[in-house]
Length: 122
Image (cartoon, rainbow, N blue to C red; front, side, top):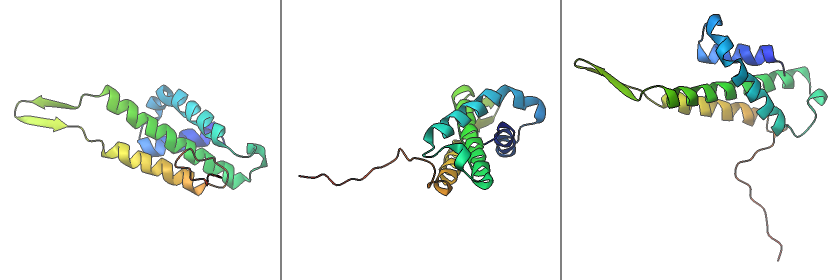
């Protein structure tokens, strides 16, 4: 997983300009740490393709966190005369689905903290 690939994927998803990306580099680094923490195997043991997919997953996670940040900091709605603009959380839902899809594609190397079903021995 490389920071460059994570940032590149984040840029693609967020549609931010290069001049605005520096504000969100820490978000991308945080996403890399989060993805590495989910690894079941050492990153060095993975193929180049899998490491690239990890970068994509980290970029998708950074984008999801970016959407959460925007939702938390932007006004829900505003009015200007007779025009009222209301923010939607559709982008957040799409970002979450995208991140989940990236993780599913890496299910063989990432641990899943979702639902866990296990038999209880009596």
